[in-house]
Each structure stands twice: as structure tokens, then as C-alpha cells.
Amino acid sequence: MKLLVIGGGNMGHTYALSIKSSMSEIDIAILEAYPPRVKQLREENLFDVYTEPEIGLRNVDIIMLAVKPQHSASLFANMKPHVTAEILVISIMAGVKMESISMALGTPKVARAMPNLPAQVGKGMTAYCTSSIINSDESALIKQILGSTGEAIPVDTENDIDASTGISGSGPAYVFYFMQSMMEAAEKLGFSTNEAKLLVTQTFDGAVSLFRKNDLSTMEWMNRVASKGGTTRAALDSFETNEVDKKIIEGAVSAYNRAVELGKE
Ligand SMILES: NC(=O)c1ccc[n+]([C@@H]2O[C@H](COP(=O)([O-])OP(=O)(O)OC[C@H]3O[C@@H](n4cnc5c(N)ncnc54)[C@H](OP(=O)(O)O)[C@@H]3O)[C@@H](O)[C@H]2O)c1
Image (cartoon, rainbow, N blue to C red; front, top):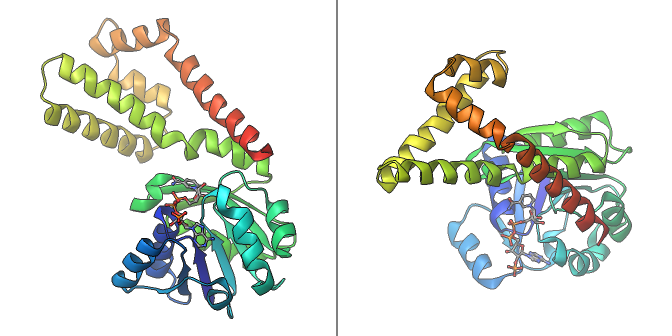
């Protein structure tokens, strides 16, 4: 089975590597347009690297679209003469609707996914949906391909993809935001930058590992750390008074609204 990743940038390259390491039955090639990147990919010598769609698309079974959304229209026009209706198209391009892909390429079998940046370290979270024509074997294949970078969950509609953008797609930045505030607090309390980084990173890592360990809710874990009149309770009370939770929810909803808006452009 041959898979062509189109766009060998951050995400495309990440997927090519992850699929290669977990699905030996798939032969992966990359189509890339930016000459310095083509040179880098060829020097790396892990994949066949093409620059012309008509050559890269020969005998391809699956295409992964990983170029920036603003490049999609010209890419589709160049690809169309070389794409057949049997090809399975998986797009990770933000905001580009399945119907647009299907219409532009003349391919009914389309999946659209929203991955996130931790895919680069095998801890990605990807939500995806597929066109109704996709059969169960193809569906399993898509899940395996997208899951090669971490976790992948199917969702029912493209609106759910926009919703996942507000949570897991943009979410790593929310975590970095919280981390940055905690590092600033650590430095304010006298720790060096390196110490602050270690204190905060290990705390995030440890808290997530604990949370994964059993079925306790976040509230139950908070109550395990906080005791009445204690230090943690002072921090949590301050967050509550300042309605930090509501602000985080508002932020995530803003990301969702923006994803919906971008999808209409
Ligand atoms: N990064 C993320 O966290 C993330 C998360 C979710 C979704 N995505 C989606 O993933 C996609 C890729 O993002 P990225 O960060 O990996 O972008 P990127 O690093 O810019 O990679 C895209 C690569 O594709 C190349 N390219 C552009 N047009 C092409 C064409 N016609 N044929 C072949 N190659 C072409 C680009 O070359 P040029 O530099 O010359 O344009 C670039 O090297 C985007 O659609 C984005 O919305 C990214």
C-alpha cells in the first residue's frame, strides 16, 4: 500500500515518521514544494521525496494532505488530473471542509482530522471524521494512521472537529500559558529560571500521570492535595474568587468560534 504525504513540513514529516515506525505494510513517500526542505528530506534519506504531483501520485492508494490551508486551492488544481476516485484522502489541514476536498479532487473517500503539536513526540490527540462512503476496513486503517502519533478519536461531524480544535488542537498552548504563569510565580518566589522550569514541568507531568492512574475526578484529586485552611486551598480559593475557571472556558469557546469562522472563509 502506498501513501503519499503532501507537504513535508512539521506535521507531514511527523506523520511520515510515525506511520513508518508503526505500519510496516505502508510504503511512504513525500511530495514537497519548498526546495530547501526537499534537500533536507532527501539528505535524511528515509522516504522517496517528489516535487512533481504527476510523479508522486503514481500508484498511490492514500494521500495525506499536510500543507497550509492557504495553499490548498493551487495544490488541488495541480493534483486533480492525477487523482482517481478510489484514492483515500486524509486531510490534516485546519478549516478545509471535506466537501471542498471531495469536490476539488473528485474523490468521495475523504477523512478530515485535527491533530495537535504533541504528535511530534508520539503524544498527539487527533479528532477526525470521515465521509459516509468510507467502509469499516478503511475506517480502521484511518484510525491506525492517525493514531500512529498518539491517540485518535472518530467524531460524527465537522462541527465536532471545530470543537476539538478549541480543546485539544489549541489546548497545548493553554497548558503552556498556565505553565508560564507558574514559572513566573516560581521566579517571583526566588527560584532561578532553570529551577522554575524543573519545578513546573515535573509538577505538570506528575499531576497528569496521577490523573491517568485511576478513576478519581480532577475535583477529587484537588481535594486530596488541598486541606481546609492549608496552602493549596488558599490558591484554589484565589482562583475561584477570580473566576479563572470561567476565563479558561471562555478562552476555549473563543478558539472554537474562531475555528468555525475560519472554516467559512
Ligand atoms: N502544526 C500544528 O500543530 C497543526 C495542528 C493541526 C493541524 N495542522 C495543519 O497541518 C498542516 C501543516 O502544518 P505544518 O505546521 O506542518 O506546516 P508547514 O511546516 O508549513 O508544512 C507544510 C509544507 O508543505 C509545503 N507545501 C506547500 N504547498 C505545497 C504543494 N503544493 N505541494 C507540496 N508541498 C507543499 C510547504 O512548503 P512552503 O514552505 O514552500 O509553503 C511546507 O514545507 C496545516 O494545514 C495545518 O493547518 C497543524
